[in-house]
Amino acid sequence: MAYAAFRSIGAYVPEKILTNSDLSKMVDTSDEWITKRTGIKERHIAADTEFTSDLGVKAAQKALKRSGVALEDIDLVVTATISPDYFCMPSTATVIANKLGIKGATAFDITAACTGFIYALSIAKAFIESGMKKNVLIVGAEKLSAITDYTDRGTCILFGDGAGSAVISATNNKEEAIIDINTGADGEYADLLMTPNGGTGSAHDSLDGEAGSCFMQMKGNETFKVAVRTLTKDVKEILEDNNIKSEDIKHFIPHQANLRIIKAVGDALNMREDQVVITVEKYGNTSGASIPMAINDLYESGKLQSGEIMLLDAFGGGLTWGSALIPFVPSK
Ligand code: UT7
Image 1 (cartoon, rainbow, N blue to C red):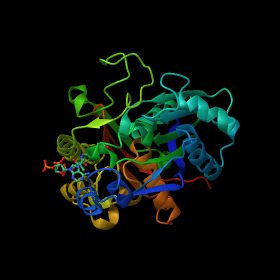
Image 2 (spheres, rainbow, N blue to C red):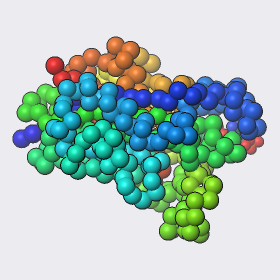
Image 3 (cartoon, rainbow, N blue to C red):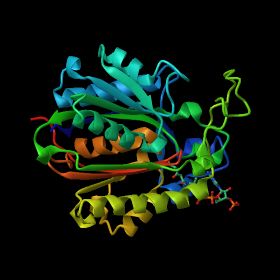
Image 4 (spheres, rainbow, N blue to C red):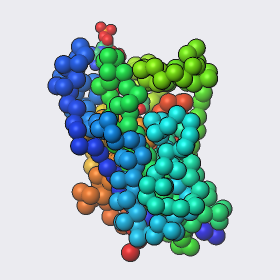
């Protein structure tokens, strides 16, 4: 049987930085409020000419180079995004594949908001274990600044742009295999976090490209509470199912939405500080890109070593959630 191995990581953030102090000139907020309530100090913002696919391509180029897998051997490209280059088609995955020079591989996008990278991982794992594909490029890429309402202080302080990517390849060695991935969803909570306009399900379905038609709206406080509850439950389940104790996890890499959420979940799971990876202060919430960006930070700081187990955990619009237990097994 083929197993799926997590071979490499890469990430990219655009140059421009939007600080809390910049935001305090745009809406009624302050560095003190944002820092205290979210832990965020700054986020990166893509240039007008830089699309989600461009961010994804730069992250993917790093991941591909580090994997040693040739472009012609990539047989599936999955992009997790809620800020695609185009509303319906082509998918951002096909745009990314084309810009990278990948020809003929299956390519599609998935919509699972902040859980997108974990959903994409589960797809890669399933395709590889079924024998249908051998080398999967997954990309979490977001230009959230394009769907953020910069007059709404409840949301605009949170989001940033960026991308992260990984190469998942087939292996016969069970020791290298992704251990487990859990994903779930509950549409009953859809209204907590959504882009209510611009689709056929909305009152404004004309798709006339009016400014604001795709802006995110969030019931922040309710989302916060459901997030802490769901993230904690999800991790407890995957650890129990696999007979692993939280103290045995080397790196806990949760979705980077809010430092208070990360700390509350970490405490509920008895995680030590040195186990929890935190990048939210410099990138804000980059939705589907946040987890691979955090893994890349860990990798580039030299703290992620071959064979170490990563525990991923995410929660986002839909609602969706997911967790994953993954050994990092870079190509030799
Ligand atoms: O990515 C996955 C899903 N997303 C999340 O997980 C995000 C979840 N939610 C959050 O991170 C937090 O709820 C927020 C950071 C969005 C808000 O923090 P909060 O502690 O839940 O604040 P709140 O919404 O309960 O608002 C408290 C007060 C309100 O004023 P009053 O009614 O007490 O007078 C807000 O109007 O803070 C006010 N407020 C602000 N004040 C200054 C809300 N946003 C701001 C702001 N600056 N940016």
